[in-house]
Image 1 (spheres, rainbow, N blue to C red):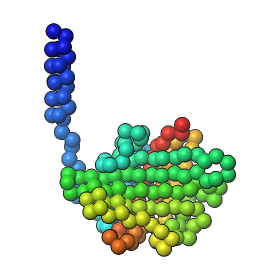
Image 2: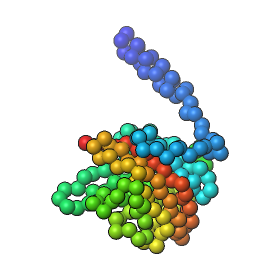
Image 3: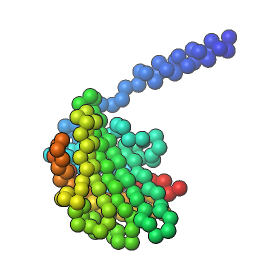
Image 4: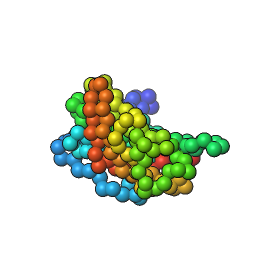
Amino acid sequence: MSNIKLYFTILILLFIIQSCEKEEINPDKLVLPEITTSGKRTFGAIVNGKIWTANGGSVCFLCSPNPYARVDYTPSPNDRPSIMYLGASNSYNEILNESIGLVFNITDNLKVGEKIELNKSNIFSRISFYDELNKCSVISDDSTNGYIEIKRLDLENGIVSGIFEADLIDDCDTIYIKQGRFDLVFSTR
């Protein structure tokens, strides 16, 4: 008898889970998150003239304290620079599945409030854009116009905030990212 109860309990739970509907997000009604530095777990930009906000997709969110973005930070031993990676995804029905990634070195040269120019800085930094539906990946290089500016980097409390822009030009696409902003939390291990 207990196996039957367990079976029906599992069936009811599966039915409830299946009946839950994910709220659809209309990309035409999106607004950019404010530029903040308190760990509000936001990520957004204007991509090719349209508002782009992190809302889910292919980035591993279960392993992140942010609902729709991920931060990987691993302190490096000795005198080598640490690397921080920020990633966010945006998906909408079967129309859109895109990701933006930022990576930069954390060194003594990194100054909060100063722009890290993608094509001029002595600090390694990259911005990337990936369109899953069109299988197009565009990554900044030394000729890319753009920057990342860290507004807050709190390694003790696990908060990284900033702004970014880039003109990403590649054979498969040209992506203009303007007014980018992020305010994320991460594990300090």
